Amino acid sequence: MSDPNLPNPDQPQSPQAPTGQPGAQQPYGQPGAQQPYAQPPQYAAPAAPLSAESDKQAAMWAHIGGIIGFLPSLIIWLLLKDRGPRTNVEAKEALNWQITFTIIMIGLSIVIGIINGVMWATGMWAIPPLLSLIPWAWWVVNVIFSIMGGVKVNGGGSYRYPFNFRFIK
Figure: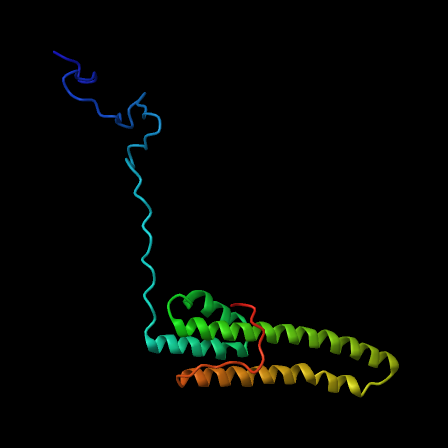
């Protein structure tokens, strides 16, 4: 009679000893008994291309989103540029405009702040409030251009801002 705890020499040996028994060891480099072999990671399939209508809408929102800043254009361009040709072109154009607008707005604010400081120091108190309207007027120009771009793209065309630095090509 043979001992059931000893291996049977007639049976092929499994590379993994049962877990939970005292002294059971796993061969070096082998995964544990709970997970014999790790599955390769499953990656999602690439996103489907946008339909013509969705492509047009995303491009429109890239322009109109400029009313609140450059983030809507940036997010739309980064997420959808590879899914729709119109979205790629129009969101890039809107993002370039928003970067241009932001740089000019910051420059205007600095220059007007310096001029206002000098004016207040010299006692010319009537001019600084008028100069402070310039950044507000520049923002209104941005709103007008952004809406014009959104309307033009929604109508099936393409929109180019009157002046724009091409930071993203």
